[in-house]
Length: 288
Image (cartoon, rainbow, N blue to C red; front, top):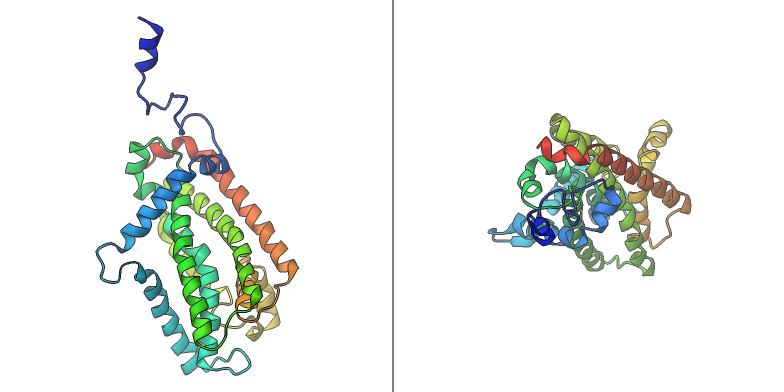
């Protein structure tokens, strides 16, 4: 048999192929980098599919958070009389709440949607020769697209309510890579562990709710007693929320120490996700 015949006898998608992205060893970073085009296509498909067939379409990405924000505003600003800002009105609380929720949801929603992604999208892993890391990365990208829309609408709201953002607001873009790093690292780690222990996927929603309550989103950090404030300050999302509010609501620079603290956590979560991914990458398809 000729050498040409022997080379073509192996199907293109065979795991032993040199072009097969699943073959051999890989890291989270390499798998994401070499799958950027696929991640983009998966994210766009996921984004369109989430709202296809509905009357409002993509506007649901904004309407759903607004319903929750309105509920929290009524409870805390109107019923419980929580005051924020110099005037302490309902509008000020609403803007305070929205800025915090955009900052938090950019991270938390990516984690929530990725928790069981390997299990739920097992057919893609079996059908396409792609690195598993592309799936959680695509979910994180979809959430980022939604939150960018929410951020643009929030900027319009700031102008509409007489609180136009200052020149420093543009630097909120610099926080997005940190949020993506935190979300991708935690998402990948949880998705990998869920392959082995399915209960973690169901538990993730509860853990995110606890994390949400432990982040000063619907209450000012300064309202807490000193002991609780020290605990809340350990939360890496606390300075992220504070930075969003400093830039968008007050046109002030966030403390550099806070940004350094978040950066350290972002690197840690990425390395954690990379390590967990490396432990199970080769057997994910066997367990879903």
